[in-house]
Length: 286
Image 1: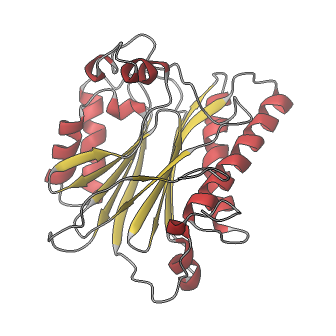
Image 2: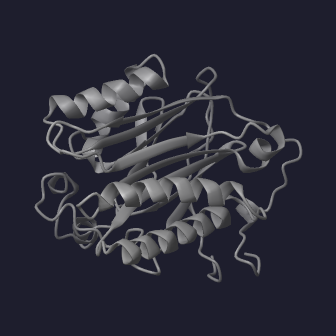
């Protein structure tokens, strides 16, 4: 760990970059019940080759909350500000850059809430940066990230929620989470706490892998095995995202749906062992 909070995983240069070939598709749907869509998502790929080699491609899903049009403002602000902050300014590696971008977005949403009188305006957010041959995933709240490899699925995030805390404590089983009455009670989100620090996890990527980012409008209506099967059966990222949204809609579509599927091009081969690594926050020790 370096003094500025940069970890060894961040301390590479953009020289001799091996850039993965990606195909991706972001999808939003209002669902069948909600009057407004308070989810947002975005995929960002710099046109400048040097910038792309250094900072990679960025994918963001945000699930707004607050009502009275405040939720969509929070989600829209989160996506816009995180994208801008990640690609601007001095480069300090993916994990540090993502944390800084989340901090900037958090401050912006808090300021907007004060200016517009929207107490409680906020957003659950996940952002994934694919840089060289790895992914860095930062999140607050209950937007989820998954890695699908060879038909198996690995969750890259742990929800910041009341129910997840009770799962961790052994008071609830994971199968009770989707339908629990307190499922939407978050313990961390942008806009509601000045210290809304994201968890950041990194993992290696391989050809034929797929990343899935989504809001709870999807994962609350499909278990992990169904998500893996749907992504694996699809011909491409577009059809995978559409099939996932269709699955949620077929089961009632009670919430807004935000989905991004990212596929790494190439034939299935011997993939690296999947070891998730939690990136420590600045000033902490491994």
